[in-house]
Length: 181
Ligand code: SAM
Image (cartoon, rainbow, N blue to C red; front, side):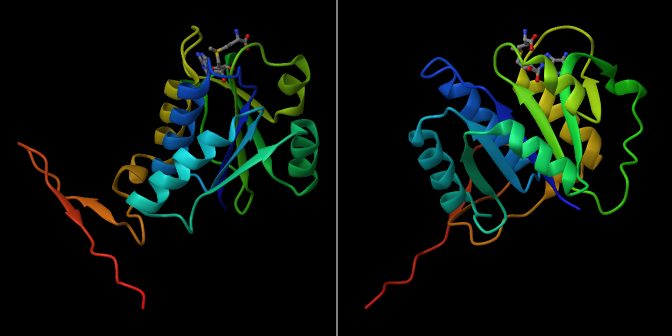
């Protein structure tokens, strides 16, 4: 069972930073993949650079897609579960995260107005509180509830840089890259 994110919509330039942060949260908090629509290729480069430096490039994929409706339909056809994060949904406080075993989960988050059919294509519309806020906050809190905090101690393979946690100061271990002949 794995969890992926669909970032639906992206206003060029204006949303670059938010979409990048959505992708960083997806990677850092244990998702296997992020699908994005309408984004600039530079976002892809930024995230790939983070994966190269901080590890986990084999465990996290990014795909830019055009037809998100077809992704949602295929996901359902393949027996996956679609969770849409929206302030109009059922409050996450009332949700038990007992998802059917073995089913892959796709978490959908929007940028601006989310098309109405998403609310019906989703198996669950979940609200992280019923007030408007941010897709980054909604995703982070959802993933934290889903993984019950375990995502925060996840390790990442093949990292060039690794933080040595310190209560004061900053310590980073840098792996020397082997020279190729
Ligand atoms: N006005 C937009 C709409 O009606 O769809 C919402 C835009 S909001 C800035 C961007 C995204 O943040 C939403 O699509 C949703 O995924 C997420 N979001 C914002 N507040 C949320 C909440 N309280 N619970 C869950 N997700 C939320």
